[in-house]
Image (cartoon, rainbow, N blue to C red; front, side, top):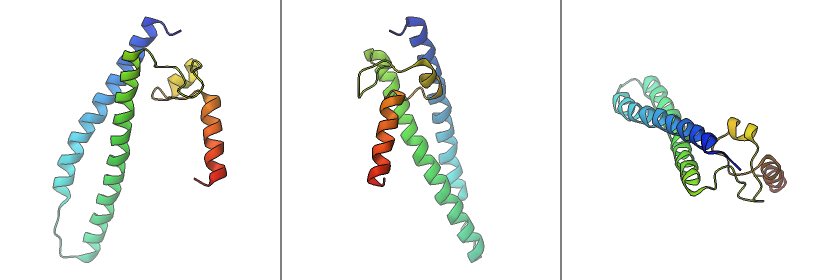
Length: 121
């Protein structure tokens, strides 16, 4: 069972992480607006398009991470944080420290990854 002190530690850790990502998100939006160049040089324009595409993919990954952090904070509020959603066992402290947004214990995560490899995902 997770102590209140540990719950508070993870709540603060996740909140800081979320704040950093949200701040980066605001800067990214400003950066995308500045990227519009309209350069007549095709090579410059292709490079800009490639950079923009890369930045959007990073932004998309960060957006999914933001959702996972919010879900972890909700699990803290509900009392299910640190409990494997698959088997119901407690997730070990080392795993939570390495990946505080995790929803599976290491055994269930490995099983999931093995099944995905078998299916070719």
